[in-house]
Amino acid sequence: MTQPSNTPSGLLVIDKPLRLTSMTVCRVVKRRLVAAGAPKRVKVGHGGTLDPLATGVVVVLVGNATKLCDSVMAGEKRYVADVDLSRTSTTDDLEGELVEIAVASPPTREQLDAACAMFVGTIPQRPPAYSAIWVAGERSYHMARAGRAAELPARPVVIHSIAVLGYDWPIARLDIRCGKGTYIRSLARDLGVALGTGGMLAALRRTAVGEFTIERAAPLNDLPERLVQADLLPA
Image 1 (cartoon, rainbow, N blue to C red):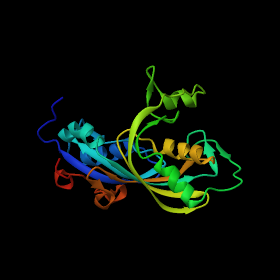
Image 2 (cartoon, helix red, strand yellow):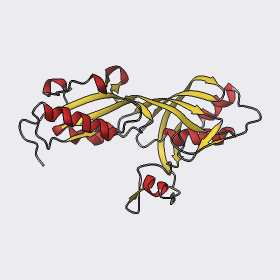
Image 3 (cartoon, helix red, strand yellow):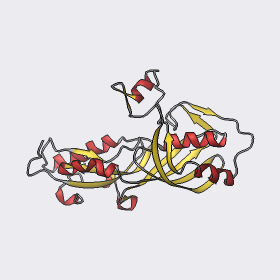
Image 4 (cartoon, rainbow, N blue to C red):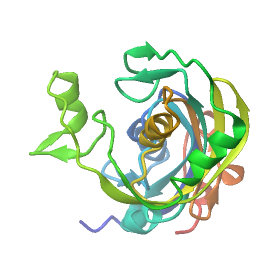
């Protein structure tokens, strides 16, 4: 559908707060656009979902810029992740049922570095059961919440680099650069398997989506109550 000529068009780079969904961010933006006079049917989308328990960069697309969704999503992503090696989780993060894992001898920093290196490149990765992937016409997380968790097949993803920013047992802080479709929750789980420990995501912050970095991002609460064309970046 062609957007009316008075429809704003462009981008917003938002620093998403904790516990909001990416679609909630889009709804906030749409409400503020309409408050400033944009058509009620103005299109607002985002270039890549960020889980509610993650913070950081969400690229919001407005009007004709929503056509750029695929190209924005295809850009390299960068994250800072805290991986808890002492526990596992049914959701691979803090949202699920947590299980403490007894680890007689925590891995050394050298062992952690070596394990991280195993996951750099094009690797097979099994998405979390609690993910938005479609399975027979139903979202995987809906099936999991109904007690019908699907064993999702592994698929190839690209991880460009993993740098250990800090390690204080049981938390390893990682700087990860990766391609589209990579689940950092799955990486945390699989890293624990490789080390013979627990493995789950304790915290996640997305610091870049392609050229859109956290330094360019505005906190959601700092947006004007009435968003106009001048507030948007050109597409």
